[in-house]
Every structure is written in C-alpha cells, then in structure tokens.
Length: 336
Image 1 (cartoon, rainbow, N blue to C red):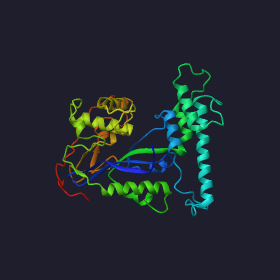
Image 2 (cartoon, rainbow, N blue to C red):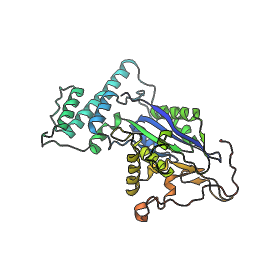
Image 3 (cartoon, helix red, strand yellow):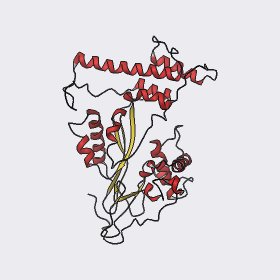
Image 4 (spheres, helix red, strand yellow):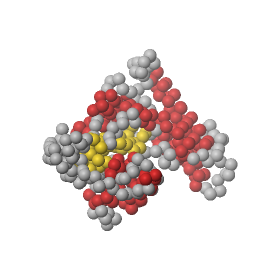
C-alpha cells in the first residue's frame, strides 16, 4: 500500500441558518500532528500508534515511509534555506532512510530479543521471520515482547498519519498553514484540504437532521438500525476508528454501536463531536456557538455531563436542548 498526502470530504452540511460544517479525512506525516493540533476550533480523531500491530506498522514503514518533501539547507530562523539538490539531496535522503532502517531493527529487537535479527539480514525477510515467530506458540520465552504502544513510537518520524477533522471555521488554518512560511509538509496537506473543501457542495440540512460522517444510505436501511440515534452512534464509532471498517477489516454496524457505547462508558468523548445538528439563536442574546462549532451542536454536547460522564453517572441520556430558533432566526438563509 502506497501512502501519500491525501485529503477528502467525508460529510459537508449547511444549516438552515447558513452555517457550514465540514468533516475531512486527511493523511499527512505523523511529525506535523502537533502543529495540526494547535487549531482548537477543530474536532478531530486520529489513527493511533498504539492500536496498529507492530508487524503491520513495520511493513508500512518499509514499503511506504514518509520522506521529507525537501531537505532545506540550514540557516537561522524557523524557515529553512534553499533545498539541497543533486548529490547532496541524494545523500540526505539516503541518511533519512538509513535512520528508518535503524529504527526498524530496534523495534524488531524490542518485540523479539537483541540478535534475533542479524545485521546482515534483509529487513523485509527479517520481518517475515519475526511475523512467523510471533505466530509460533512455542516462541522463545526470553523474548522482550514489548507492547506496540512503546515499540511503535520509535517509528513515528517515518509514519503517515490519518486524521478525521470536523469544523465550521477554517480561515485561520488556511491563513497559517497554506502559506509560504509554513513547513512544506503541513503546507501541502493544508492546500489539499482547502482544495477538497472549496470544491465540495454542502448538503442543506433541515432542523433536527444530523451531519453524519462515514454513514451512507446503505446504513440507513439496515435492520440493525432501529432509530436515528443508532446512526449517530455508528458515525461516532467509525470516527473513533478513523474508518468505515472495524480493525478486523469488516463493515459491522453492531460493532460500531458497541464501540460508541464503550467510548462513552469509559469517558472517551471526542469521537462524539463529529455528528452534529444545526442550531439557531433562540433569542437576541443567545449565542450561535456551541462548543467549538458555530451554528451547530455536536452530539457530544447533547449528552448530560459530557465533560465527565463517569462522575455525573449519566450515560446516553440526551439533553432536551432547544435547537431550532424560537425568534430572531432566519431559516433558509443561503450559505456564506
């Protein structure tokens, strides 16, 4: 599987008040995630380094590692100088990939034991050797057998990373990240996201309808869906996995709903921020903001005690919020 910079719209909606809410899926180098996460108007969920089996992650790193778009020359300040060219660029690239190979060897040693993979072993062959050994119930007991939540961390500079992000406000992100002064990698993904957002036509939703990323019409007709809230739970569960599919590679509505329930029971509420309903002002002084969304109420905000559901002792009970404007609203206003 070849990984690269990618951006696509998962759901795009506009409220009767004209407020637009968009959910995007973006794939970019893992090392710019910290910069991406500084934008607080975003609701986001990411593929976790802790969740992906070590062998699967190693295969991705060997087959499709992240390599910098350019190797800028050193100079004072945050922006690099002119990119290296010719032999210098080739040498820098080779050094980067040599560091990748070293990281892979160290991870293989953590999940087996030092010396199990020799320095002369070709890494793809060594990986197959380790994969076969892991499946062997009689594998050596002296293995270090370090868990993926630690072992995978050594691979992060070379990883691609996928994020689902939902927001009503994008201008500051475009301004700072789709800009010549930004690091080339975040500028690339910001440009792709902006292009996807600009070329998308949002669906007009009525009061009470839901913005549901990763839900399609085939889900609505499934016998496993009893109510609209079941679809909301499916959407949240899939956003938590950053995928239509379960980690077993299956499309399973019951598993999506079960994952949603587990998330809420354990207090992991961020995936519930992607499904949302339009809201309008109920009076002249009523705010149009709900959390980080303008003109929309995230499903998370509909759950009583969502900031600390375990302490509140309330699970899945929706607040009876007034989402439609009682006065002062301008239903049907065109999207900005």
